[in-house]
Length: 79
Image 1 (spheres, rainbow, N blue to C red):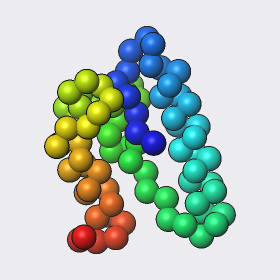
Image 2 (tube, helix red, strand yellow):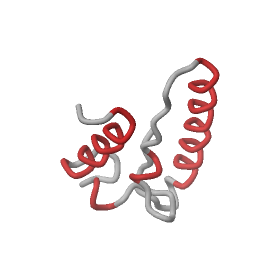
Image 3 (cartoon, rainbow, N blue to C red):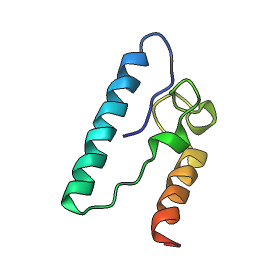
Image 4 (cartoon, helix red, strand yellow):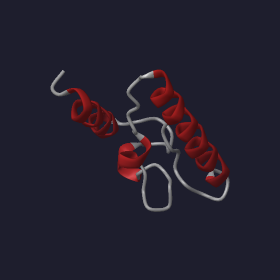
């Protein structure tokens, strides 16, 4: 799951996203699946979605999808 832009109202959302991602990573490992962390390359130091990757704090821009694509390529090579 991806972060959303950080503000007073979304801090709890991003904390829950981190917990869900941790669970998904554990389950993926237990079941022999590959987990790709998209949260880290898309988040700022405050845990929110990088401003330059979204126009509204939730939906990705073309630059955001490029970060997503590069994260996948790092695990699987060129698609």
